[in-house]
Length: 163
Picture 1 (tube, rainbow, N blue to C red):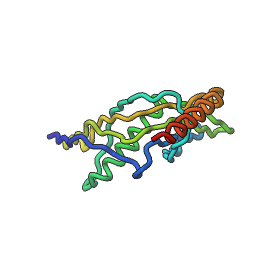
Picture 2 (picture 1 turned 90 degrees about the vertical axis):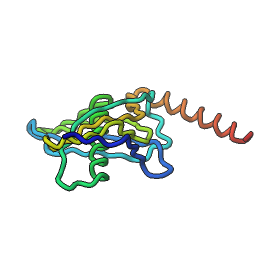
Picture 3 (picture 1 turned 30 degrees about the horizontal axis):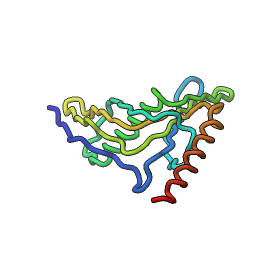
Picture 4 (picture 1 turned 180 degrees about the vertical axis):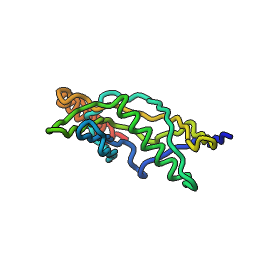
């Protein structure tokens, strides 16, 4: 038996729309030992290249008696990790046998859950999400992007005088 939830939207904190997100995967001796998803407000982050609407699909396991809020949080986290791995700026840091692979990007909330289907036989949720995403630009482009960002801010402030 399959149950389907209606389309949901996951909003971030009220008043904050743009977030810098990074997913770090740490491995030691070719074994993943830790991972971390970080999401911080990025209102004035100029390092984003070009935003586009990204869709991701995935599967998460279901825990007995898990609340709807918990499932939506796990869907959000899993989908952001997938989007970052597939579309984010990748960087690698290595020291001895330890390696950290980082994936970076910027999102504009909300994250829309288009499909959230529970498969009772397999105890899994199948999901599809959609969000505005931009990978972080390569560091050699940061100066140019910063200048563009400052010019846009100056024009925005100038036009606010006439409102």
